[in-house]
Image 1 (tube, helix red, strand yellow):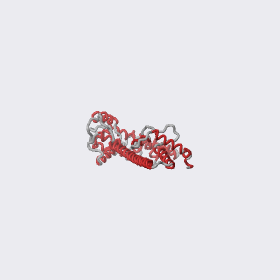
Image 2: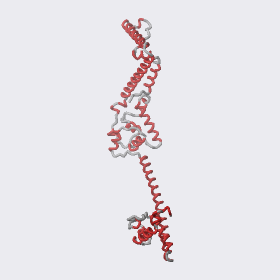
Image 3: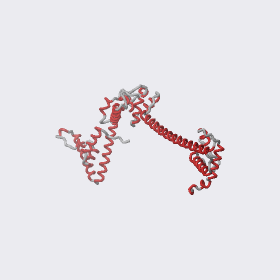
Image 4: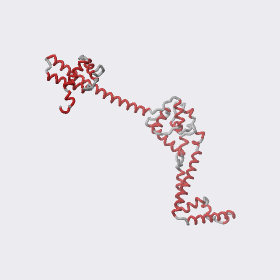
Length: 340
């Protein structure tokens, strides 16, 4: 990952670029870092010794030769050299910024956290929790001694960002100060804040469940909602089936009553068989012509068992007989239902 400049270093680098708007002057100063010191003559000859004077004259000749060399190059080549040298200078500034960052107190070995200790404590202050999340020792790395580096240090800037999120979460009662690890770590995970793996491992080793309780609540709430919808659907189906059963019961009672009052005529028998066969096919999946028919069997959901539960006991053979009679009587209709 390329090192980037921040804060004061970035400003210094930009100022350097602004001062070197002349590409020839810029390239000369990059090749001869002491150019500004030798380009201007001393106020008097007494200000410079003999050997120093000779060195200055020699350097000025070198500068003059290099300038002539640059002036002889095509403008396109000068632009390329200028861009390459600027990038090289930027990398030098970035490397210097990275060296300074490594030397700061919060990046020293003694600033590393003792996870074996801090994973055992019952609670952390928010400042301790933030330092631990970065893998730093809360005893050494505190906001009071970090905030002065926010302008120049990438670490301090990240620390400030996480601290800002934590304080806002505290104001909204998502976090507390102090806060237990079981609350802070899930909050950090939910907000995509990197936490030192050693800290998470140490806390989990103590039997602490690191779970996002809000996320768990939302999932359980969604499951409860789905179960409620399924229950409503089952209740509606049960109500519908009960109504159909009651309708069938009334039809059977009416048919039974009609049969006891007067003999069934051929046309009435024909209508009754039509009705029985139609209900058997519609509600009991009776399939004419099938070798085995669940509708007339002894298992749950069959016509004989449903009639028995209603107190209208009728053996399976009788049911089969009437259905077979209806099936034979209306075989032509069943074979070509659209013609009738």
